[in-house]
Image (cartoon, rainbow, N blue to C red; front, side, top):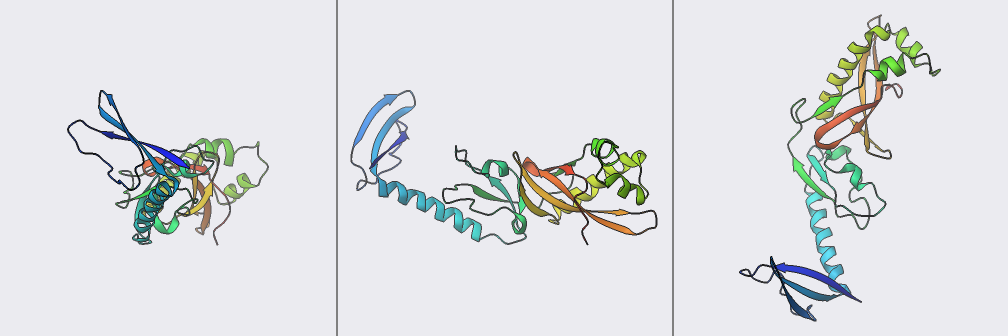
Length: 228
């Protein structure tokens, strides 16, 4: 089986690819940017090139330490995978998705500095997660009664919003989160939030956050169980 590759070469430049053993035919066609060289390669040449790329990506990954931070750079494709949900997301290596995601995965991991709260990372939390959900009478799931038993009411929604934001962004940047998978649109992480009840006893609860691009996290679920 033969494959086609289009290689651009500027008029004043040299040929980008000169593997004569692989080249079976070469034709030139003038265009405004220079020459287009149409090369035909046998199947094993293409597979060899892809294997070289995969090997380079894997070596880059293996050089990372568990406490390093990376930016996930996805390769656009039409495959039914989750790679695009991680694109431009910041992960600490010890809590990142499986890499590579699949045999044809060509995603790159770019090493970055540890994110800094409210500078290179940001947390957001819609106050309606409390006013319209936790303290709403529409839901009979026990969360309203649970929070009220700790001494919180709907009037505390603004306080809880800011407490969640401040704790979540700090813990995320410290790598104190768990990667828990994806939904239809994004990656999800779990962060433990600590609340103090009216008797001064700390409650450690699990919360779920959407992991967005460039160090952004947004609250999805304000309570998903206790962290004992």
